[in-house]
Length: 427
Image (cartoon, rainbow, N blue to C red; front, side, top):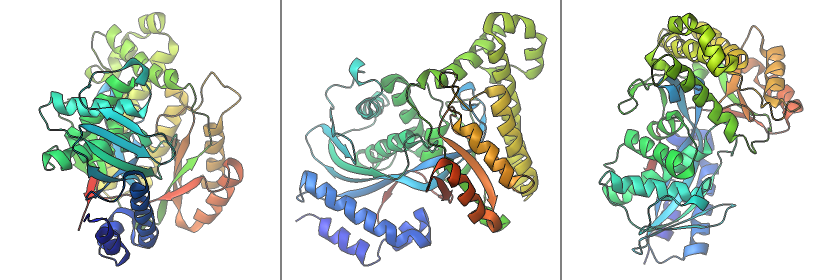
C-alpha cells in the first residue's frame, strides 16, 4: 500500500504546518494545505495510487537590484518569494520522466535520448531533457519518475516561473537519485545550462540561483563558475513596508529578441574594449572609447553599458544600506536603478509595440502615489510584465486600489520573502 493516504492525513491533521508556515507564512497555511491535497488528488487521477509519493517545491524570485547585470558577470540582489511551483512525485523505474503540469500537456522524456532536439526549443520538455543531460555530464545519477506540478508563479510575471520549474526538476533529481548531494548552487547552474543549450534562451544565472538558494541574497558573478553568495537579513515589515509586484498585463509574445539584445549588445561593447564581458573592463574605458563604440555598436549599446556599470555598483550600495539598517538610503538606490533601466537599459517597453507601454504607465502611476514615500522600478527582464514597488503599509490599500484601477483587479501581489529555495517537503 502506498503512502498517499498517510501524507494526505498528515497534511490535514497539521503535521506539515511548520514547514508550510516557513515557506508561505503562517496566515497562508490552511490555503496551502488545500493546495497540496488537491495536487495529490490530481496526481492520483493521472498516475494512480500504487506508488509512494514525495513532495517538492521551488520558489519564484524577485530581483531587488542589478537589472540585467548577471549575464555580464555582474552583481545582483535577489530573493525567493512565497509563490512557487510544487510537485507530487513517484519513481517509475521505466527510465522515463513524465511531468504533467496543470494547464499543460504532459511531457514524456526518454532518458535514453539526452541530446538537444530542434523541435523542442522553447518548450518545457527541452528543459527537462537538458537538466537530465547535464546531470549525466557531471557524473550524477538520474532515473525515471512521474510528477504532477502546479504553480502560482504567474508566467510572464517577472518572478521567473521558468527558473522555478527548472530548479524544481533539478531538486527532484538531486533528492530522489543523488541523496540530495547536488547542492543549490549546482542545481542553479544545471538549470541555466538547460535553458541556454536545450531551450535556446541566452539567460544569465540570477533567476535560477535566487530560486535554488533561497532567502534574500547578494550574488557576485565575477567568476560565474564560483559565484560569491551572501545572505542578507531583510524583514521589510520591520521598516513598515510591503513588497509589491504589479503585473501590468503586457504581452510577452515574440520578446525573445528584445531580451537577447541586451546581453548581446553589452558583450559587443565588451569585445570592442578587448574583453569578453563588461565586468572585465571599466566605465572609464567605456567613455575613452565612446566614438568607436557608437560607430561599431550603436548608441543604445553604449547606453546599456553605462547602465551595467551603474547598477553593478549600486548593488553594493543597496546591500550596505540594508546591513546598516538605512532603508531610506536603500529606497534611493532602488529609484536610481529604475531611472537607469528606463533611460540607459531601455527595457521598459518593446520598440515592436510602441503603443503598448504598460510598464511605463504603471511606473508613472506608482510615482504619483508613492513619491517621497516609497520606491518603484521595472522588475525582471522588462519590456512587458511587471514592476516592483516598496510601499509604506499605511498607504498599501490605497496603492493597491489605484494601481489595480489601471492594470486590472488582483494584479498587485503583496509578497513575502521565502527563507529557503528548492526543497523536498517532508516531516
